[in-house]
Amino acid sequence: MARQGSWRGELLGGFAVVAICTLLGGLFQQAVLGFALANVGILLYWSWHLRMVQRWLDRPLEDPPTGRGVWGHLLDSIFRLQRQNREAQSRLESALDYLQDSLASMRDGGIIVNNRGGIAWANASADYLLGIRFPEDRGQSLLNLVRMPEFQSYYESEDFTHPLRVTNVSEDERSLQFEITRFGAGDRLVFVRDITDTVRLEQMRRDFVGDVSHELRTPLTVLKGYIDTLTDLEVFSARQYSKPLEQMQQQAARMENLLRDLLWLSKIETFESHRKTERVNIGSVLSEMVGELRAAYPERTVALKIEGDTTIIGDEPELRSAFSNLIVNALKYSDKEVAVVWHAGADVSEFSVVDQGSGIAAKHIPRLTERFYRVDKSRSQNSGGTGLGLAIVKHVAAAHQAELVIESELGRGSRFGIRFYSARKGRP
Image 1 (cartoon, rainbow, N blue to C red):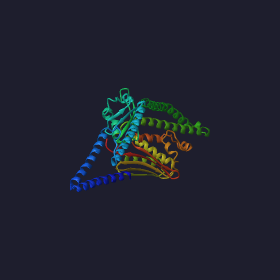
Image 2: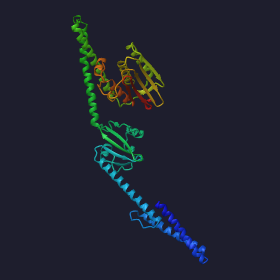
Image 3: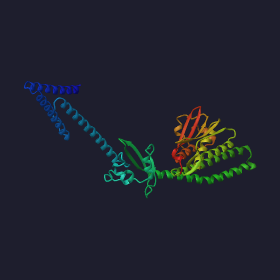
Image 4: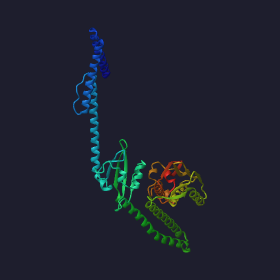
């Protein structure tokens, strides 16, 4: 209201000056001259104030000049906005300095990239890990300096939900992990971490599991052979011998299945990052698999439904293993019909297995893919499972850039699925 009043007063004052000068001029029979002189005076007054504002704006650090009326309000408003802008800029610079100081002290590489893809800042670790030197490389395109096809695809994909791992990026077989976060008006913060030791430890673990499992197969085969021989001997047909031998056979078979799954899981993990280029006809795989399972479980009903295109890019043995694990699990834990469905959409294709079993409590679902995790230990033992089935399925899904989907409700059954996205539906 004060500003409106000031403008109104300024206008009324101008009209008053014009009116007074016109009347004075009329007394001397020069009304037109008085009117003109009044307007020229007002114009000079406003021009002088405009020049004063312009000179102050050219030197904003100086104190604002003193103005009257509306000009005083205008100068005060400009000065207040300037002060707020300087305070905001100071806070922003302080936050940026704090961020840069924090990133500079990190062992991980930190790079700030502007909305044009140019390097705005980088810490010393970025030089060690990626060869990016700051300030020498300021303004350079990040993708021109980091020449890794995997990183370029990840950066341009705009999907930073999961970090990117790149192995063997240099002669010393260094492995790096990239994480990207958006901020500001299209700017990005890129973190890069040296995970060489972690990758080597994981590989050592996989090699150890694979080697031990392989080495155990030979003595286990010998034990199974002797157990089978003893079982066939008439002298051991008595009850006191037959039952222990039967239990030994069951445990040997269970151990054999466990070693088989461990070896298969180790193989999948080893080749998980390898590109899959085989064209797989999912329809043929499922038809053959369901036929075999119907023969193995004659008392059970397995319904198969296939919709849409059945060809994807992948690895058939791995996919067959994952599908088989999900279907067999449903047959083990449900005594009703099991539905096997393949549905191919425009962007997403999904394999799913639906059972009408007892279901799984929500608290167990996040841990189902952990190795050897069992919802009901006694039941799993009796069913002969190894506890590795869903871990295998999870790694097969990851190897195909797919997603494992688990939905379950106690008393109403479960739905396990593998969701393949359009990237796996094209051509190699």
